[in-house]
Length: 286
Image: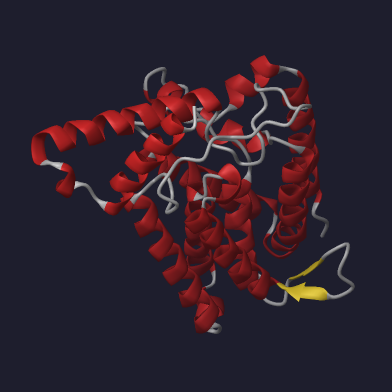
């Protein structure tokens, strides 16, 4: 049995990504935008953002991982099972982002949620699946790759690395784990350390995201655009453009100042103090 559907999906995603690179209107229409979804009822954005990426490096990593794990899943369980898990993983990541950022001016793109779902479903549904990296002459065990990916994502979330919104990653991973358990619970329980460890890591990170959707770094980091990069093309899994960052920062600052006027500066949380200090430093630097 071949992995024709996985290969076809990778090709279609690459084509749409290239079109979005050259046509800003297409990019804007396919982006994940909570305001457009909730106000304009453009529900297709829950899925369409998985067809576009901010750079070929971003697309290449996602499509490489999708092919590596998705082809194994399709060969063992068929293209319909692959499609269901991929679609629900995208939906799970998007719905989580929609809830966390329902009050934010927010934009997102990338297939990472769906890819994470496929990765975590495959390592338990197709035990022994590995990843052969181009620059490493060894096969990396799939379960090691998956857990390392989760830990790396959590580190990036904590440090605010790369202006990436990591919520879709964890949402997709949770969906993949749920499907793996529903389809082959005996396979999941045969490797309880990896399975429950993955569940605990995802649950903990989702709790952190619930407390602070903008990440643990204490501030929103502006996006740096290269000279060759159009402002209409987001980079990587980037979640904010410069205008959105400024609007969100000002909204939070207004809320902090209002809190000080009513309850005093002692009422501020450590994160609110960090935001206020950051604002003061930026004003002094002007």
